[in-house]
Image (tube, rainbow, N blue to C red; front, side, top):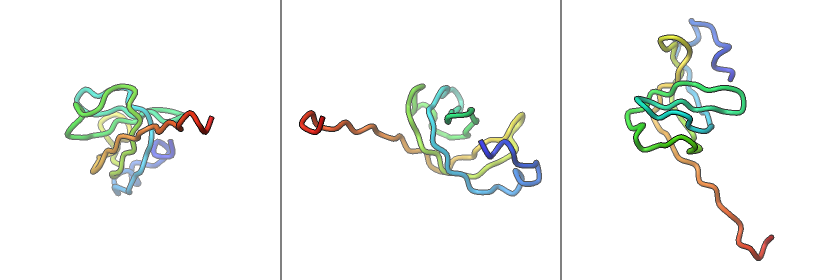
Length: 88
């Protein structure tokens, strides 16, 4: 993601972030993967999500302990809507 390309100075600025992806880990926080890579998301209710859930995360970026992170202020589960059979 573009977040990983930021310098430490930019990460410390806490720029806003909006990411979408699939939860791969929900133990102590969330790891959310987009089409290219995953990122750790600090969130106080990881138990509300399971691996495989598609989510949208709103928050701010930070340097993290080992790699950039997102400090979430909102996490929303995205829902797949299926078309009725008459449209197929």
